[in-house]
Amino acid sequence: MRNNSRGRCRPDRRQASQAQTMPGTCRPHSELKATTVQALSLDQIKVDRRNARTHSAKQIRQIADSIAAFGFTNPLLLTENGTLIAGEGRYRAAQLLGLAKVPVIVLAGLSPARQRALAIADNKIAENAGWDRERLAIEIPELTGLLETEGLDVSVLGFEAVEIDQLVTDFEENAADPQDRIESTWLKNTAVSKPGDLWVLGNHKLLCGDARSAADIARLMAHCRAEMAFLDPPYNVRIGGVVGRG
Image (cartoon, rainbow, N blue to C red; front, top):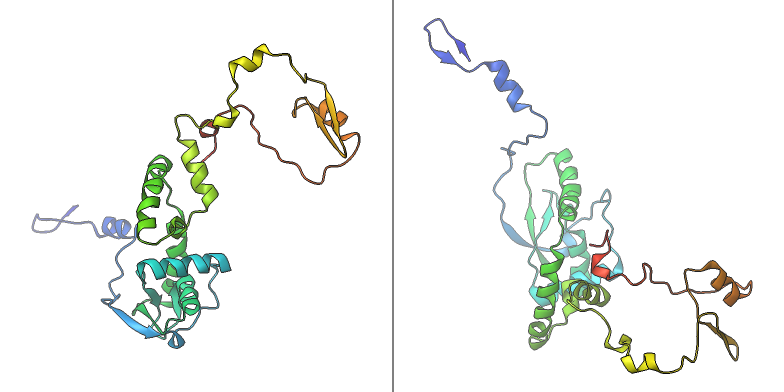
């Protein structure tokens, strides 16, 4: 603050200027006009050749299924000349569904630089979100039955079946497979096989050993090279407690 000739205080313009240009501070874009949703024909929309976002055929199918289930809930964002800023995946899904028109918002007043920046930010900022996996493990199983009553498959959520199974398993109190249970009576019987036994089953071999042991692997393979291996490390550790998951 500074005193003027009349003894009144007024803001220091240098300080005000510094505050306005503080790094990381964004001011509202005053030139951006009010936006409204309108229906536009697909053939009036142009794809931006600069768009760096990619969409697999599988994901386009997922988006199409979502639109079919819930409607076109997220309008495309366009420039004033009809070029896509955001929503190419939804645009491709609309083509797949054979839609004639789609809801769009025309963003007037954005500079070319802001248009290009929004095209990236619209996707990247959404990616920066996360999941509360424990809540998700409760929500998805509850939804599964509700969706079935409405004729919808849980895949409409966008999660793979194996992802859902693993998510639920991670937060089960007892995720052990009942078939892996060892009956106490088995321990009283005479062991048929013991560590080190190598069973020859026609063209196949089965070794009672330790998959972590290089010596056991060498004995089983006899210098042959496996075409495929199924491994599940770390062993004997509850999956939900493995550091790095989620």
